Amino acid sequence: MSFRNQILRGFGHRGLIPGRRQLLRGMAATSAAAGLGLGLSPFASRPAQGALTGFTFVSNEKSHEVTVLAPETYEIANKIPTSRRPRGMVFNAEHSLLYVACGDEDVVDIIDVAEQRVVDGIPTGPSPEVLTISPDEKLMFIANEEDSSMWIINVDDRVLQHEVPSGAEPEGVMVTPDGKTVYLTSEVADMVHRVDVEQGIITANVIVGTRPRRIRITPDQKEMWVSCELSGEVYIIDIASYQVTDVINFLPPGFRQVDVTPVGLELNAAGTRAYVTLGRANHLAYVDIATREITDYILVGSRAWGITITRDETTILVANGLSDDISVIDEASRRVLKSVRVGRVPYIPLIDDREGWSPVGN
Image (cartoon, rainbow, N blue to C red; front, side, top):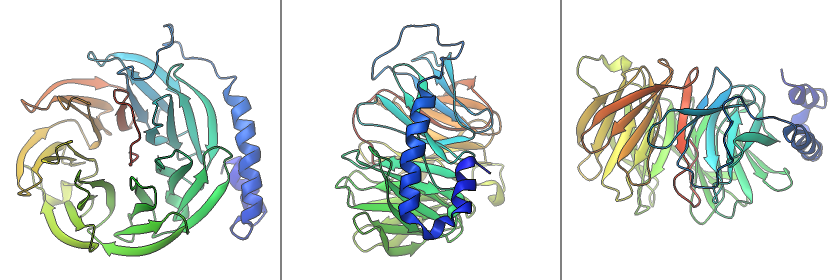
């Protein structure tokens, strides 16, 4: 148990919200002071880079680090030690900071992108997994897996604004461009919650497939796509009615249905194509958004998990959690160009190649 959780347990933390806020302030100051003393890893013998470096950052759950890959070559350029079990990550709008949810130490590490080192931390609830930030960057939304809640934290002063009880094991988090609504998946409840940010309450739920993971919204803001790991499906929800309108099933050649465990999900900017990683089925699926047809399956590494796409949409990166590598895929030819070993159990790759706020964490 982390030191923070021992304190919270000793004070009966569920009944003492003001005390928790004071604790967050105190621990944030402590972590900031500690972070400033952290040194660069042995890989970091190069000048500091500015924003939009083109580097790829990969969180590795079991080696407790973020691996940095060089632009174009995807060779390892650096390894950044983090708190234990880094998983979900999100950049700030300027890409000067990278927020990393570290599940085994109940903290969001803050990485300085230019210096490529941890410089601060934000205490969280038990086992943070996925996070994102509001469009004005004032609020952070954190899915706490073991606490069955989402925390809404003020980024500047680390004050807990709301603790939103959810279905068990919340994970995927997405905030709307107006900052008023957050969508949150619950793995055990098989639901997507709709959360009012100002009130800090769930206003609606929709039932989807078994163990929902990631959320993406089409560029026209009309549909929500949700990957459902254990039912091997992607559910499509009409946002206006908040009802399920379609379900896509996956089954690459040579695999049993039980092996198909979709997790990672991305859409292209035009809203014409979706990319879905199929977990234990070791494939990436291409899906035509308009017709819902699966147009191709691409064999990648073992347990295909997190996914991201370069800004120009020519290259797709897939994190393979059981082969400890990243598959680099040419989008047009649908071929794996290379595999790069990164760290133990890579969770998600993110690329520092586009400026601006993102509504979703990975």
